Image (cartoon, rainbow, N blue to C red; front, side, top):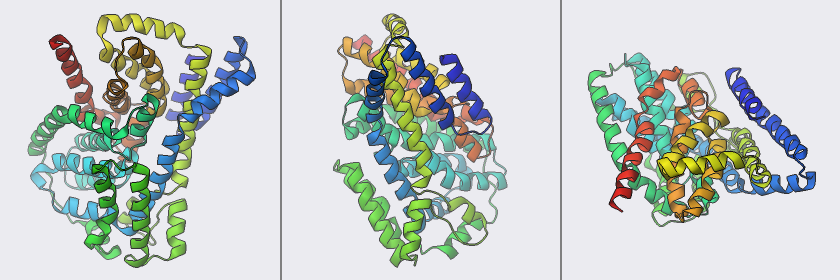
Length: 433
């Protein structure tokens, strides 16, 4: 059954079919398997509901992300960041600048796909016209995009991990920044060297010109981003700061960018769309509640799997084998190995996170290891490793968006360095203890 499910996922990815369909088929298959093993349909229904509840916080965040990504496009926040980010780039340090800019945008947006689809596309256009190695730039962009996907308070994956482990989001974020410092510095050094060897040859900044013509780029358009960052310093509930950011962006769209009330409502529902042809119109469009529908359904259905697996004990033999392996290689190394398998099998970041947590939760509990350590280990493994599996949508979608081949992930240094550095760090820490 697991082999069939994995084959369906790979088939859908290779043929451009939504991952939602094989997830639904897989759910039906696992329900039938549970019935065959003697579980009652009523009990299986309770398991499904129990698993689905874990996704509610993520779905709430996804709804807010859908609204905020549309509003930020409409009010000029995204355009402001892209315009000035590109304008202040140095040709000699283009690649490292691309990494830093995508780190910033992904932290603000909390979504890797949204980052890649906006500033990432702009950077790739500059790279193609500036004679820079496409795969290197794409790798830097993807690495930067997952910087925020991992540690932004707006990130659905960060909120999912906090929910699964019953930990506080902002405490996890502090821990993530602490363990990411060395990988971040090493990545900056690597991208700086690559930038020196692959300088950008500047051409006409057509996108910058179009942004100037289409948006009022006054400082006020940064207010929605400031409203996200400042409350985060005081650990305000991210749902509150996101809601306030949406409200401010909505008002800026009305009174600064001169959008009508019906237009702003339509943008929130269906995504932002510019009128007329042009490169900018293709790049800046997107966001909206509808764009998050498929993602939210994927999260919801993926979460039901955890309820079935936990309630029926379908993974019990694997959990026992993994616990024995953990005795030999250590907890974090076990999480990394489980992450690679889960990300390869599950083909989605969400399912990989749920499966990895499912396997490791009892092991950490038996060893009386803090839930905060489990949350940190998940963030330092499955969240970033999913983006390194070519057939996982966490990797396939950004690569396709950037029109890069799978080889670009070899240059996503930050994603490699997070687990590698923390493997060494955890080992050394255990020796000192």
